[in-house]
Amino acid sequence: MSANPPPALPTDLTGRVVFVAGGGSAAPGWSIGRAACVTYARQGARVCVADRDAASAQETTALIRAEGGHAYTLVGDVAIEADVQRLFAEARAHFGPIDVLHHNVGIGQTGGPLETSADDFARIHAANVGSLLLCVQQALPDMLARRRGAVIAISSVAGLRYVGYPHLAYSVTKAAVVQFTRMLAQQYAAQGVRANTVVPGLIDTPRIAGTVAKMFSDNLEEARAARGRQVPLGRMGSAWDVAHACAFLASDAAAYVTGTELVVDGGLTGKYT
Image (cartoon, one colour):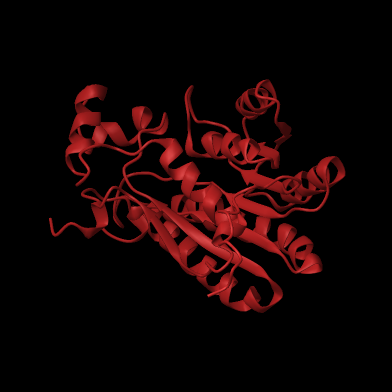
């Protein structure tokens, strides 16, 4: 056995540039994207906060700067190629080449195949999967040039299993995110680029108040309680539970982790019923 002590957990991201697609919040509070941005900044990263909602992105940036961190607001739609090209050009001009891409984009609507139009399916696919392609196309050359980088894509347990109500377009596109990231990891592992998917379960974010909760109850607190009872750990997760998993994958602590899914669901997907 070597006399040298084992290495400390290398979670520091000082000097690295993290581009977060979806760094705002759909409503006031802590979304996964916002919590991830703040967590990356706390680890020393320079964070590019990209979102369609300028005010929400600016709020995330302000939270980071209030703690002494480094952040820059970028406003645009990552499902539109021209916007993505502009956003990444602005990010590089402000902070330099991208080290970490965090793709945190997801829209959907309830309904199965008979309730989902072809136009709606195409719109949801463009937002959830097409935007991942566009962002990877911009971030990957920076990573390949330095033979180092990490891609973190946010999927959902809905992309792994049926979640109790029809959510076809969202579920299918989030399953595609998993496979996209697996393929990316395999193709570029030899060039030093890692790619992993984080799979959140039932997470208590501002989004559930306007969308998911109505599947359980008209009363938000009753809906929260009903969702929590589904989880073996007895509660919904928080945005921070997911953000901390993302921060691990972005760091050198996950240097030997690529092409896999980190499920953050309190044991939900392991249940029999």
